[in-house]
Length: 339
Image (cartoon, rainbow, N blue to C red; front, side, top):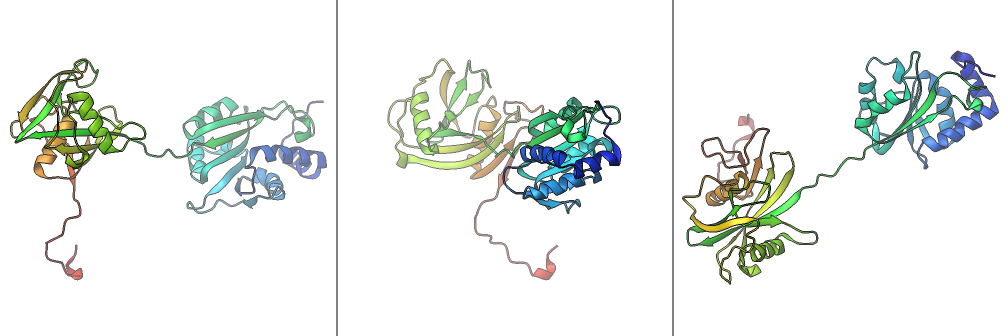
């Protein structure tokens, strides 16, 4: 027998019938967190589910709380289909969740509802995982099979990503007032531009070890750790939007003869006067060397859409110098005069 289970009679059946309660409890046990947690229940039609969630050991709140309150799960029944902007509602509900929390939404499809595939599309930007269970065929839940599309969507929110960046190292190799630069070639990035000897820090390396390794691999010099000085640290964003942190080191002493050991990636190496650097440099590197010349220690260099990879000699600089911990010699200002 097929019945249309809607309205108060359906809710009364689900609350009163022992078999229906057991069926809904079994479903909730799979949808809600394994351990007892804080569950926010939204919508009048979810009242009976709130009772079952409490019986399963969860701490249930049935009134939407202040924005700063967070929950292990948000449970709603036939609410999303009633709001004017379902995408905004999903975003608001996910912001009520603790990391790795979940939305449990019991919804119906047409007519008057939201089809399951539509809900999944709306949830995709917010979710790390969405699981949909069709419920209409389970007669125990409704007191008989229903022809409506009834389903549950369990939406696990994406855990916040930790900020991660590439770390690279750059060598300011000094010979009196000259600095060594290498012209990039056949790398696919900034080819034809001058750059300081540089490279990425490999897994397990510290930045000093990486700099010593890159110096030997690229220009055949051996630098004693005691002869390597930190010049500055720069956070840089590339034109494609990815960020990295660069450590610039200075070395004035080394052993071995400077040579181009990577001709497949470098057209040649050459010494330049620090006061007469070439304009055709990688912008990131030029900003670092200019900051070094100025005595700056911590710098931001942020590419924006449309910015060139190369140094723009007639454009405003992109570098932002961050003040570091030097004694403030300015006279103190009385508290009453501060603005």
